[in-house]
Image (cartoon, rainbow, N blue to C red; front, top):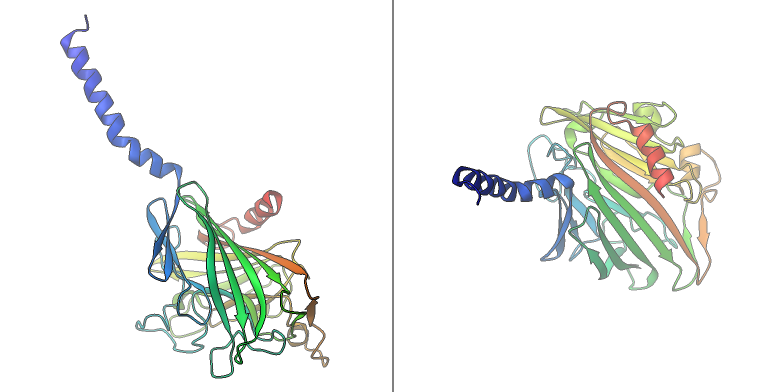
Length: 321
């Protein structure tokens, strides 16, 4: 026979444990992906991380993107107008992948002569685990309706109290004939950072650094394994690092990273970056019927590149992939 006071103590203890169970599960980390109208909402540990926008757009893109502290890390324009943001480069939307010369067609800009990256379908979604994933099928359609090529994209999302990770993997298929990525700086794996993170501008107080120790405006056109863009947002220093996978063609990549907030990895724009006369030096051809995969990691972190331990995080990425 259990004494009444022990029985009451046992019941209260069990009740507390059960009440705390959801909090414990949240602390362990989970990535939840929810289908919404024309987009996928992605949450990490119950907090909004980003949306994948794919319907009725020139190209699919992630926006907004929130860092581990809840700071908004992407420029809002043109999706939303807020004070103190420059209204330049309407095609710099959130985080995206595309290129300015694919078989002679411009998929980077948005204008009357530009092509579109058209979302075909969602192949698979995995939600609720420590790592969430999305796989999609897309096609690059020129202005005249010609399908230039197709691609499959796989995104993997995870995070913890230290940072949030978006792995971006794209497999390009030369399904409609050979594909030439032309030599232009206008590309390719890109993000437009929050206005206060930029190096220059009326509210910009940020910095850029790459794996070779090159900083700020000098990073443009340089080759490096990784690059980090950091600065203040809502009173906290936050940053986003982009990692170029060692198996990517032409690793380490060149960086089309600007002091006004554009941050892009581009392995094709060699004549621009190296200031060469030959404007075809960087052309990269994928023969008909073949495929090629590019992999990048975005690491959203607090602090600068040292506080975020970006060099160590890059080595972790290389070892795990």
